[in-house]
Structures are given as structure tokens and as C-alpha cells.
Image 1: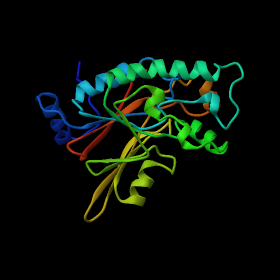
Image 2 (image 1 turned 135 degrees about the vertical axis):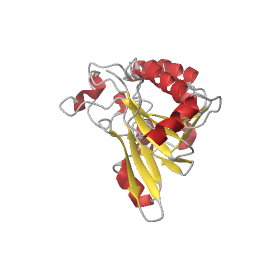
Image 3 (image 1 turned 180 degrees about the vertical axis):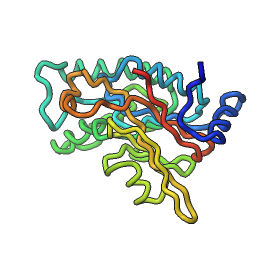
Image 4 (image 1 turned 120 degrees about the vertical axis):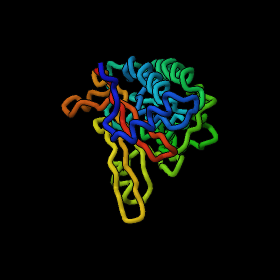
Amino acid sequence: MEEFRPRLNREEWEIIRGIRNSNRGGGVLEIGDLHEPFCLDDYLPFCIEQKQRYKTEKIVFIGDIIDNHYASYHESDPDGMSALDELNHAIQRIKKWRDAFPKAVVIIGNHDRLVMRKAFTAGISKKWIKSYKEVLETPGWEFTEEHILNDVLYVHGEQGGAIARAKADLISTVQGHRHTEAYTNFVVGKNFKIFGKQVGCGIDKDSYAMAYAKAGRKPAIGVGVTLDYGRLPFNVMMDL
């Protein structure tokens, strides 16, 4: 059986094979929105497999680690878990991600910051609020609004699509937020070449927290990988 590979040209594929067949690491694994505790059970093993396959050294979670359905500004399911039960369940599931990826950069997504927004609306000082890593018990994770690595910008993606953001800022951009999109597109000028990448997600579309999107397109379950110091980006989709 022919070995699976992303749709790359021969030169790019040879670079990947060289990395996989050598002892040197390099590259970034870009993990999509989890929305724990409403993430697919098979998404974590899939992400671990891609880290091993492409020997990535850096891990970036692209945002919305936790769903916070109970704290939504929209209607929440009255038959769903209580606030405490949902949070505790999410923390237990996130521990598995922490154990698999003890060091990671985590982009803060709109669902991650829901509780912070509620506290702000209620006039509660930040001094009363624990940090993300304290609540989620992930001491080795760095939470940030955006991150630049190898001249690639990592953001959650609430300001529009990845290719539009890349064009606006003239920097290669990787983002999530849009659950149904997974692609890597390039913009080429006379003196530059940049890309915009949507990494997909890992959400369980059948969970009650995702009921708002049941009439829409299916989510794109996958990850992003960027190798060769930001010069070789591609998507890897999960078999469902």
C-alpha cells in the first residue's frame, strides 16, 4: 500500500522524508480547537501520531481549549452538565493533553476567555481570578493572545480567515476558530511568499454543546504542521 502523504510536490515531500528518517527534530504541530470536554476521543491519539510522524518539537494549541458551554452568552442546554461538573470533566480530559504535550504554547480563544469576560461584566477585579494554567492544571503551557515562531503568526482567528489575515499583516498566519475550514494557501509577491493556514479542529459535532452548528457543514477534523523553519506548511486530516 502506498504510504500516506499530504499533497505536496516532490521536493517538499523529500524534505519531510529527510526529517522523518533522521535524528534531528524541528517543526511545529498546530492542534485545532478542542472545546473540552466536547472533543473527539480519537483526536488526541491522532495528534500524538502526527507529532511522532513529523518529529515536531514545538506544540501550538490554536485556541478554545475549553468550551465553557455553561458560561456562554448564548443559551446553554438546560439538560447539560452543571457549571462545576462541566469544568471538572474538562480539566480531567485536558490532563491527558498535558501529559502528552507537557510544554506547549496555547493561543487564548473566545471560548477560553468566556469566564474572564463574565467576571469583567460583573465588575470583578483580575486579582480575584486565577490564571488559565492554574485552573486547567497545566503549569508547562504558555497562554497568550498571539505567538510568532519562525516568522509565522499564530492567532485564534476571530478577525476573519487565515489568508485574509496573512494579507493584511503581510506575515504567514496559522489559526483555528473556523471549525469547518482546513487549508493552506499561499500569497506570492515580487519579494515575498507568505501563507494562510486554517488547521481544522477536534470537536465532537454530536455533543450537545455543538447543537448550534448541526445544520451547517461538518467540521474539518485535522491538524496543521509547519516544517523547515516556517517554510513548509501543510494540513493533515484525520480519517473518520
